[in-house]
Image (tube, rainbow, N blue to C red; front, side, top):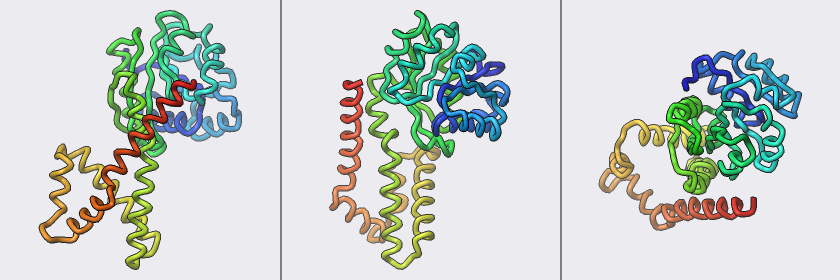
Length: 272
């Protein structure tokens, strides 16, 4: 299965849904007339139609019947209701779920036997086309189907393929991770303000520093320890700063944050 010539349907057009629409169109994977979106919020549908020139459907079944790939981007608590609504319209479409915490098994049990289900966990950076997304596929999904899904999510950032049992770890790391980085950027900016920089300049420098460092990690292919050494001259300013970070336990604090968020994700999954 290739994306060329396919139609994509969205059920739910919140921040993540709209980010995907924006990314798909930005990457020119399909043209606007091949995207169909359904949502209970008619005002949002009108806004999307005006902004992106896509097709909108007030009935979710219409979005399903018209498409080859369906992206379910609703809140986890209403997934079951949506599946009941659309199950009679499912034929051979690939179903992509980005609803947090809802396992593939829920979809496979609710939809016709043999339905192709892929679960994806993107993060909030999808809104700026820099998401980190983890993909895991159900039993009926082919290699070709999975490649199409990866192509879609690569349009809004970068993807990895993982088994489903590791998605709680993804939640703790890349799902919650942006909040950790926002905190770090704020703290870096505070340090700059303390030393006399105005707030706007300090925030710009802090955010660009994080962006640039991340880009080096992703594109240079060099171990993070080596990259750190590139900045850390003997007896210089950086090693003094690193000593303070190590004394304050920043490294273990970041590890513990990921682990704690992962554990909470597991707890929430058991309650669902």
